[in-house]
Amino acid sequence: MIRTLLLAATVLAGTTALASAADLPRRAAPPPVFTPVPVFTWTGFYAGFNAGYAFDASNDSANTFGIPAAFATTAGTTASFRQSSQDGFTGGGQIGYNFQFTPGSGLVIGLEADAQYVDFGRDRRSALISGGALAAGFSAVDPRGLSSLDFFGTVRGRVGYAFDRVLFYGTGGFAYGSGSADRSFGGFNGNDDFRTGWAAGGGVEYALPTDSFLNFFRSSAVTLKVEGLYVNLDRGNRRQGALVIDNAANTAVAFSAIGRRDDEFAVVRAGLNYKFGSY
Image (cartoon, rainbow, N blue to C red):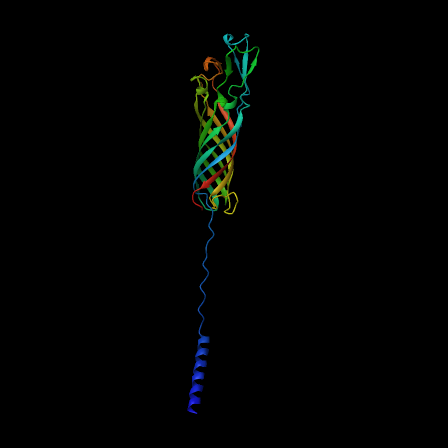
């Protein structure tokens, strides 16, 4: 009897304990950890390369040079040089820095420098001879203008507005260029081989998504751009007219007094940049 009473008391105590535990407040589960989605920013240094096409934008359609009688078969022989027909491939690289005032969408300012090869020199000796012919062993060339330009570069400011990963911008600043006309014609020093000027233009740039097949680095730091640029290089007014060349000696034996001419050309190019720092 006593054993039965003890067993019943034990069962009753256990049941009471379970009921009391069930009435206790349950511990709340911890809140989920919130991970904010990174906001893309254009701020940072970048470097890349570009390629495109350049073509003459000057107002000069032709220059005519009277060949001195000593170097022509007929008096009154002339040589005409078309300047506006110059065009060719251009390619090079760029480096720069952008600063975006507000991540996501907002004002972006920056500075960019580039150096470019340009294929204008292939038509350097192209001339239309009229009224006679050049004497044997001589040729005519106009080393001015785009025909002597082999490379150019710019240092430009950029101002634009970003809509998240799309940036529209304008750009402008200092430009320079040089050619090989002096070295190509027996060291003749009548040209201004190095020239300076200005450049202006604009473009649009897009930051590739991480999963894009063009994003080789699999990061948010690869951008593509399409840009148009107008370049004006001042040649000055030194002896830079058309020349008669002694082909055997590769030296200039006569030159015209044609003066100043600006080198004006336009560039349309596409480029790829790697921005250091993903966001």
